[in-house]
Length: 222
View 1 (cartoon, rainbow, N blue to C red):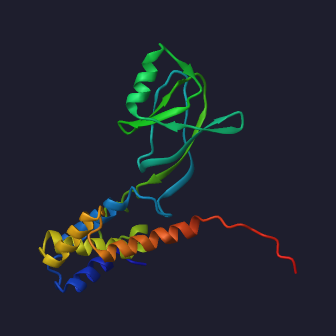
View 2 (spheres, rainbow, N blue to C red):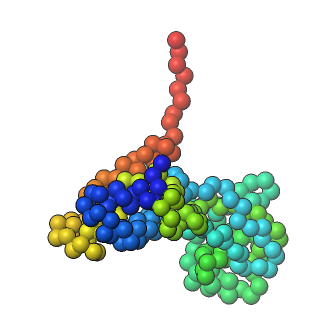
């Protein structure tokens, strides 16, 4: 298992800096995690979380502190689940004021001011169930102690390490080769710092696909 200190020391060794950039490397490791935390990986998915039970006449509901974004939001109605449509805040604001005091079974939602807003405003109590992408919470999200670890350092080690290392080369060492590599990535419409980071990311995405892919079972007649 990779720890914060292990990754920092490895990057330091690869850059041959003899401990001179520990603070900068640690900063860029956390920055790399921040860059990727809103993307879907198997370790930051939360399925089937009970978001709230609606209250008649209430528009807004609190979200859990580790919430980043929904994959799906469902409303339970008569032992079945109804898919809720994501909308913009402008759309729901307009619909909510189009007819005075509209109430019913919510079918649309948006995220605004870090809260969930539903429309129509509920006329009864309904369970809202969501699957969402989460932020790894403290102390995992902002690493500071060398013994700390989390899924980003364990499962995403190569991706985080290669991005942090390249970022140190660009932002602090002003390495021309690293700057050129980043510029080439940007010219191609990518947000990677290096080809190594891109390869590591694609490998994880391939692993994610294989992990989630559904196979077809066929009878085997012997």
